[in-house]
Image (cartoon, rainbow, N blue to C red):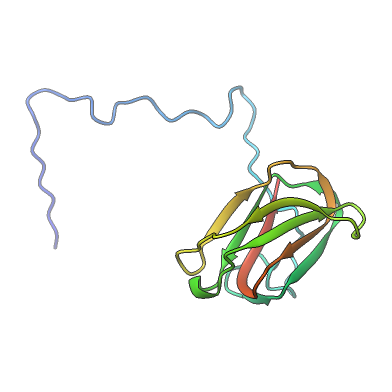
Length: 147
């Protein structure tokens, strides 16, 4: 059994009496958390909304949304740190033929297995088709486009 012993002073301190963290909203609006734009696909380990499955990605992984949507962030979740990507290119397309660079990463590190890393899309715009290109094969458990 562990015992905790406290020594209290004669006068109260200001410890833990600081201001509360700022609110997520500035008005009476209900906060709207980010949502994944990619529909859940139980048959696809990358989009099954679980990090218990994994998939090895080749040079290009392409997917389409049901309708154009604007992602502001995306996340990648590693399988094992040794097989995680260190560089990639995320692109968006309105027609599935002409691609626009949304994010380009190099020398990126996933320190732990099943680590989810968020990345910001600098210039969000509505796209229906997306592509993740890797210079070398890598393994991921999850990919999300967030809005």
